[in-house]
Length: 445
Ligand code: NDP
Image (tube, rainbow, N blue to C red; front, side):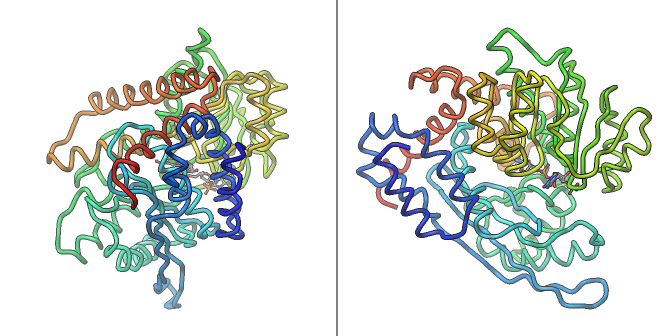
């Protein structure tokens, strides 16, 4: 890390004790910014980085609700409104037992640069709760979402803060949250949430966008070396929204997807994942990876373990943070992996990223590779603002253009700073400069 940045990073550690994921996310960005602060000292003079590390607003609230047995349950809700330099705060809600302030801040911090990189008018934010929707009835999930929104509604709005989904928050949860927002405010304000149902303000392609975009990014990276996904084997982790649509798009581009996983273990399917069966098991029935293997001849389930033990030409980690560590990266390299694109947020540990970069593997960081989701959320906001709804083809072609632009912006920035092919530097620097310039123009806020 550049010596001018070290004291700022040390201050982040002191002011945010115990928030390990947040420290990791800040460090990852700071490691790229040395050449920028040396070339443009006015960013340091205006304390842009210190300001970016301190969210504009952090809200923590109680979420009481009653379960199916009549017992009162108490959870903790979060919304961290990080940066509004480029537009209303924008970023998903995560419902998972591991959620605490450090996770929400890491995700919100990354979101600032990701959103800037899309070139769209959206700021950065993130939120969620330590509530676990898995194993809960629809009625319980609804009551939880209603209680969560009863507090959150006073902090959000189409021009203020626009949440969406993330782990544990899909179409069902967004529906309950939107219904309660409407009831609390007495306004049909479609643009307050994205990821809505298609008959009530949602956008075609939003559900698919993160997974599709990640694969398009991987294809574009491979293209710089005259390669592509056609005929390649692909390993995917996770079996949620991002993973399922990454599988779909990779197959559409001619790849054979040989793995997926969930929190119980992973599946190896040498013939190529049966997308219909995967959807039926994980999306329709909210079942386990093991159920897929039981119904699919030739596939096997491995309890626990690492999905990255399975050889693949292209790896798409689409589950959660820090799921691909240094040892896993070494195995992927030993098996000849060509490219890794992060569908999840920060799924590769710093050690893993170092191994991949050293081995010359194409590496697309989540900030760039999974930005198709939030970009399509911004397209949903555009449609809501104009009371319009676009066709699947039109929206998908916009997504594809945006992913190409993000890729090319990262590549050009890496080139400009003397590190061709370094998408980590390209993404961090291009995202940072856009948001930093807006902050400078807007004065000390
Ligand atoms: P989902 O809740 O739909 O799916 C998450 C999947 O990951 C589930 O299959 C879950 O398993 C699995 N998983 C969770 N934790 C682990 C673990 N420790 N080990 C193995 N598998 C695990 O979430 P999404 O698909 O929406 O999100 C996945 C990632 O993508 C997250 O990092 C998210 O922040 C990121 N992302 C999502 C976007 C979106 O548009 N949804 C946008 C940009 C990034 P199980 O089924 O057992 O719960």
